[in-house]
Image: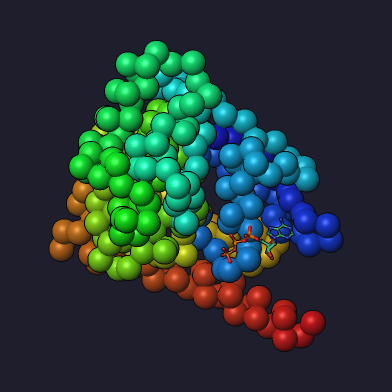
Length: 257
Ligand SMILES: Nc1ncnc2c1ncn2[C@@H]1O[C@H](COP(=O)(O)OP(=O)(O)OP(=O)(O)O)[C@@H](O)[C@H]1O
């Protein structure tokens, strides 16, 4: 599935948050969105997922959805958004509850999701009994249980320590290798963007406008190899300069206000 955003603007009362965004998330790509704090990244994601109605502009989806897709556009959140009183398997069951599925298929989807994320042995555990990384794995397994056509990820690794983040990045890489699910991935972390994304969108300071789109040419599975490092370091520098310039301008605007 692809997502086509045209001339999108959004404001909360008098606060203009996004302006003139034209953007296509292509079929099967991982598009990372970075930008200074408060520039409207989460708002853009909320609009893409239909939970925030834009002030103006259009959002369309196009293209095929996977067989058995129950919810084409599915979120993965930073805080995992699990129900604390439900076991791991019941958190997965939750997203299937309102769909008329045969019991066997329901069980199969839950088991497949749990096994895929290495959670089968923890299916009876409550979220509080799991580490942060495991909880986010439950969040990912739950998202996958509906066989989404597009994932919307709002800083999914930012609540995790560096080591766990690394492991979860490997999980995402394996996921995208296997399923090529289209993804819009909001992050503050340049290393995550460089590791996971096909393209990186840089938003300006608020109101967020499209500042630049940078393509990362290296195949994802080769980005840790020494031969890729020089070019990735260049891309990183470029992204960092863009972000830093925007953040500095935002600071100056606040100082002069
Ligand atoms: N529901 C809301 N009502 C009013 N203002 C809001 C609302 N949601 C967000 N904002 C404001 O809109 C601006 C953009 O918020 P948003 O969360 O989209 O930015 P962001 O780029 O994701 O921020 P961060 O990088 O800090 O996570 C911020 O100034 C925020 O305070």
